[in-house]
Image (cartoon, rainbow, N blue to C red):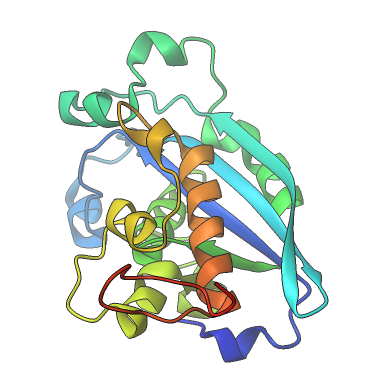
Length: 215
């Protein structure tokens, strides 16, 4: 996974989050044993992205991109409870293949930023394989493509649970829009905010848990 030091020459980062059906991604070996011609349902039902562009020593939030995606399969009830997206909401939505060119135009060849980035890697690699861009045992996106706020948080808050909610609370980021349901774009924005705070530098104390050096 990329580190903050790896970003010294980087001019653009894309924060990304995906909401999913909640079902497990089948392993490549399982897929090989499936009947020939069987169509696998998708996993990703929404993608949200926010670009960050270099601004001196820091980063400036820029354009946003979000799309809902038809998985051509069911959505787990537990996942609907989290993101609030059900099958009816996706009626008429494009498939992953339909939005792929637009998605690639937005992310370009730039560094991707995610919370628990291995999840986003797995989701994207599976969807790319479904549309024939790679094999199910191959990857398009790897650790060298991502910087992960969950990984970064471990150096600042060792031993603390690694969820995005916990990180936002530790960094005093307002996550009230996430209390009931949350979407991909909201999570991408919160991930970007957490990254900006950790990248900007802060000190941890016993009374406030997190305080910025100029306060």
